[in-house]
Image (cartoon, rainbow, N blue to C red; front, side, top):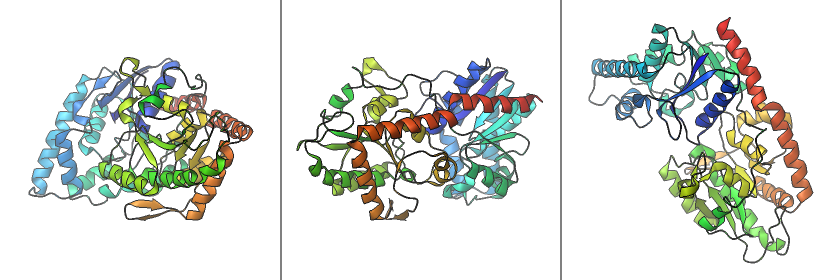
Length: 440
């Protein structure tokens, strides 16, 4: 089959981009011809449809008119402007080669660009292209989309988010239940996966340069926050935990970590953040909070990409995992958890907050993690957990850091569970079932 994988953007380090790259690899291994389609291609090759890019100015105006207020427009002007935009997106889609199927990532579920959803649906119907909606997030879960400003956008949300007559894929059981409850639609679950058969990431002569780039000494401890920098990642909880560890480290002087780092009075602890920053005000909050707590942050997105660019001394996200001593993943809300799977593959111990999908779909499989519990409160722009949970996590992390045998047992068990439940083989099996349904 000729299959398109479509989203607003690709080739970045966000979860949807990463998952699309995995689906492309597995579908190609299944002997399908696979093409990427997006408004912004990042570092990837494929079909570019500029009108659906996140940065498209006309869509961002219409998005504001759709969900904030109409301002000086009336509903007739809104409808005319949106219909013109739908037609323009529709016409750009003729850039595509003939396709049998388009797997649509989030464009039918997260109402970022309503015109693109309508145009794509009509284009596929007019050209006999089958559609699968791969839903990572739903618009009704986001506060921004909860107050549509007029009847026309309400009807679009009703009819195209998602369309009832396409196949639906979700990434967890909570989303499956939610889609059934809100829209009455059935779906299949395909969780996030990872390539557990690739060579393990190791410290090498290239990624060791990250130490020098970020002014980190060989015996300093590195905690890695590999996510994007957005509020729901609750990075302040990682700062809380690292602060506790820093204060306790004086009791470990002379001891050696599982990675062979000797703790001295000069040893520092760093929280490295190589992910994209999508909320600049949140970065300011984190910087201020880290200063209060005495935690040193290293923002590293300027030297991180999805692949290495050695001539420019740009590192892959995987390079940052290779040099890290512990992973922090205190997200309050996740559709599944790409960074969790990456940490498992990297054979690095991990600190998490027990977000709902982790509790429901992942924890029952038996993974061993350090946890901050599953209860948090939001106040003054930051998430808080009970301080006792932070102290308990600090004690567990320090126990693990200085026990090579425990690290091996935990990380090997987690790796094997990850390979069993979330490998490319799991994805291939589920995709075969999905495509069989399309052809039957």
